[in-house]
Image (cartoon, rainbow, N blue to C red; front, side, top):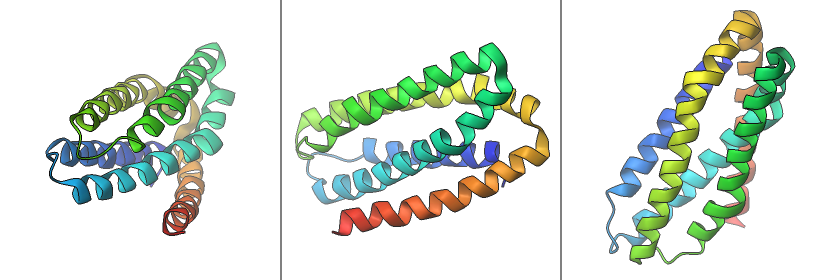
Length: 157
């Protein structure tokens, strides 16, 4: 799977998790906790492979426009990881506040996905070419598996 396909696949998986989470009720505490655990792992693994592998390659090939898109995407990741996700994870899953915070996170992540898929990924396909995208995709898949093992190990500990 090339890098662009891998990222789009991740985006779809995250959207599905948000959809499932949005259908839960305040009584579905265990379901909400499980979906949040899965969502956290997916978001963290996805952002790490983007930041460690994809974004640097895009930035190097993208010139001034690539530089701007790179910094915008990094800042969106930071907002989710440093502000929104930690607050949500401290929120009681049986509260109505939880549903509100999930909605804010979902909106932020979907905005980020839309920008990537409309701007960055088409530009990356154009700039990097099929061979480089395949190479990046292989690196990203391998790193993502490693990160998911680490993240699930942290949760178990």
